[in-house]
Image (cartoon, rainbow, N blue to C red):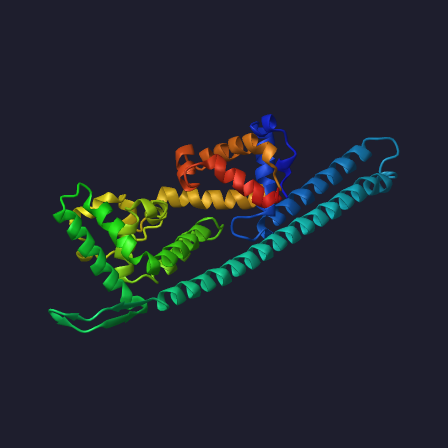
Length: 353
C-alpha cells in the first residue's frame, strides 16, 4: 500500500508531497525488486539523526546547570521513542512486503490458470478442425472419382469453393465480387465453417480481454493456423458476417505470415490496415503498454481504488505518464483506444465492484 492513497489530489501536485511519496514507493516497490539499498539509506539517515541528537544533547547538558548529571535520563528519554519508532516502521515494512508477496503469488496463480484455459482452448480448436469432413460426389463427365477430405485437408477445398464463387460473381458482372462470392461460399460451406469461426472468434476475444501478455498468446494461436486457414480467415474478415473479427486481426497482426500468393488479387491486401500483416510495435507504444501495466499494479491493484475516484485516477495517471515522456494519445492507444474505459475495467476487476 502506498501513502499516496490518503493524500488529497490537490496536495499531490505540490512537490513537498511528491518527493517523500516517491522515496517511500521506491523502498516499498523498487524497480529492480530489491529494497535493501533503500532500507540501508533509511537506516543510515536514522542513525545520523540519532548521532546528531546525541551530540546536541551533550553540548546542551554541558552548558546547563548540573552538567552531565542528568544526561542519562535525557538520553534515555530521547532514544527510547526513536527505537520504538524504528520498530514500528520495521513492522510496517514487513506487512507491506508480505502484501506484495501475496499479490505476486495471486498474479502467478491467475497466470497459471489462464495458461491452463488457453491451452485447453487450443486443444478444443484443433479437435474442431480435426473433426471436419468433406465428401465430393463422383462425376462421369469428365470422370472424377468421389473424394474425402478430413481435418486441415478440408481448407484447400474450402479455398477452391471460395475461388469458384468469386469467379462466378465476376462473370456475373458483380460490383462487389468478393462480398457476393463469399456470401455464396458461406451458404455452401457454413455447416462446416460456422462452428470453426465462432469458436476461433471467442477464443481470441477471451485472450484480448485478459490481463496477460496478449501478444505472446496470440502468436501461439497464430502458429496453429495453416496457410489455407489464414486465407479463408482473410476473406471472412471482409464479409459482413466476419466484421467483428477484423479489429482483432489488425490489432494482433494475425496475417503476419499470410501466403500472399494465394490471394485472388494482390490489391485485396489493401482492404486491411497495414498492422494486420506486420507484427511490429513501436518502442513508444511498448513503453506506454509497460507503463500502464506497472501503474495498474502499483496504483490500482495495490490501493483498491473505487469507481467514484475515476476522474482523480485519470488525472493522476496522465500526470505520472507525462513525467515519463508519455503523451495522453500514446496512453489511449496502449489502452486499446480509450484510457477511461481501460481504467474503469481495471478498477472494477481490482475492487470486485
